[in-house]
Amino acid sequence: SNLSNEILSSKENYGKSNINENKIAIIDYSGPNIAKPIGVGHLRSTIIGQSLANIYEATGYNVLKINHIGDWGTQFGALIHAYETYNDEKEFNKNPIGTLKSLYVKFHEEKKSNPKLEEIARNHFKKLEEKEPYQVNLWKTFRQLSIESFEKIYSQFDVNFDAYLGESFFADKINPTLNLVKEKKLCYNQENSKALVVENLDNLPTFLLQKEDGASLYITRDLAALLYRSQTFKPDSILYVVGNEQSLHFKQLFSLYNKLEKSNINQLAHIGFGLILTDGKKMSTRAGTLIELESLIQKTKEKLKEVLEKKETSLDEESIHKIAIGTIIYNDLSRTRTKDIDFNWKTMLNMENGSSIYLQYTYARISSILRKFNDRFNSLQNNKTNISKENLTNEFEIYNHLLFFNQIIENSRQTNMPNNIANYLESLAQLSNTYYAKTSIKDSSDNLFKLRYNMLKCINQVIQNGLKLLNIHTLDRM
Ligand code: ARG
Image 1: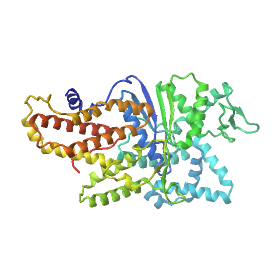
Image 2: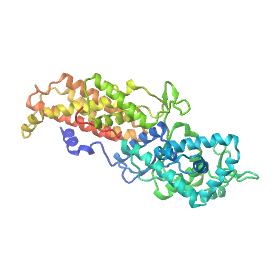
Image 3: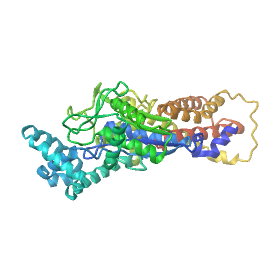
Image 4: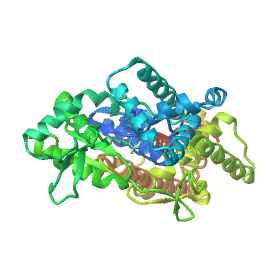
């Protein structure tokens, strides 16, 4: 059929379109905070953001992938003090990020009995703002080590950014931003302090743009970043892939921004997502339920090996790694983004449906059929096919499904819901599994054999392309 030719000749490009050509989308995702290990919340942002970036690109957008890391704020004054006072170099060299995190905790414990520490920390941060080399160098070290630890995770998940434009990048753009807000009389100066207050903005709760001591806040830096992005890149869309718990922050940010600038941004959106729960409760460091990413990957591999053992298959480490990563990604992207995820190994590793392993397994099975019949197929290459008299209802059903792939992609872009693609791939896998359970490729006439062989190839191409949009790899053998 024509569709089959189209799929087989477009290959990895099947499903892509240029309907959004010449449009720019900025996707702000991951955004971890330096001097802390990346947690599951930032992982969700990373996974969803990377997939949305892939999806936007597939529909023709120019995508700018930005990592707005949390690398600025008064807390780094505290960290500098804690580092010069309590650091254990041996510990630090072994596990820099873990150590920085404990140093920060230690600072807050000490502060309870020694209020002077507040002042000391503030001074360090002030010097950092004034670009004093001692403070700047320490901060740079913390930042660099943190980025290295983030990148270890990113490379395992095949995640990449066009720019790390974190909060510190906007430190010297705070004053012009605040001046603009003041000019438009959208904030007022609190008496006897430097605090800048925004009140009665679109019925939103009051918030600060500047602290009493003159320091900027998260929202101030986000406002500077938004103005910078809109003016520098003239984007059609800006998406912030950040947990639902920041929804008020983004309402305040967008409202204020819209009063400052006549904007050409069509889609300025907070792409929120739910929490990851274990036994119905939020994962937290204090309760000891926070799974750090390295151990999450490790644990997934162990569980995966158990499942494979039951099936009496074993795979090499590299394949196990790929499947484990796919499992973690799919556990996220197959769900409705805005809802919480209850962590459940059974669902994550279900071979029958609802998991990446199910899709990867379907793909590997089709690949093995294709290998098995490759010779016969090649020997028929030049035969003319004539299939008009056959009953092809089942094949039509599958081709009909394949036909809608690019619409599914554009739909999941418009709704910013990667799970539309996941759902689509699952129904495709279900259709094809039912199909070849009742169809004998081997006993098909040459005509039908050719058609069926090509169709399986098409199915696999679409599964592969679809999983790729979710940032998941396929394997030829499993
Ligand atoms: N660092 C922030 C956090 O951990 C997330 C940053 C998201 N991006 C943004 N432009 N606010 O909460």
